[in-house]
Picture (tube, protein in one colour):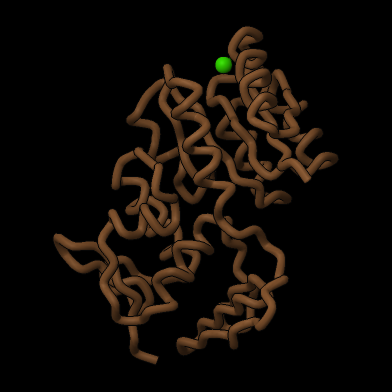
Length: 231
Ligand code: CA
């Protein structure tokens, strides 16, 4: 079954160009010209990944993404014109998984799309499900793709989930940003390290981890991150 992508862009030329390109790469492609149409399509068609332009009429990309996140865990790749917006775009409040700065080449877009789709989706179909990992109040149940904090399920994006499971599968082991990028984002990702920090900050907020004294995700200065091994 081909994966479904939704392109949300008001510029007709760019939207149609991306549509043709992605369709040729074997995806089922849907398109929307504004945020309202995007939300409607996302509800009905449940795309695997949404390419969302930041500047849109009616409802802008940030607000569209915020609303999307209330009902969809599709990957969201935000298209922006300014690199400075990255923190906000993939910040907790908006919740995009990644971003691409305009102008970009179709090849660059394809690399990002493929890296995202390579991550496992939320289906518990593993042949022998691993037992849940428990760390104090935190339970990570990979068989059910579920994370609980004090028995309350957390709503994590696919990317946050992938990041958490990589770290928590090897408590105490230090991962560099480059290693996390490779494992979570994929080999051919060529964005910058900073995305790791922003997603870690989001995860900490959801885990209610104090950034000054985190228990779960610990910063190893000058190196990267490790999962706290105190149970
Ligand atoms: Ca636009």
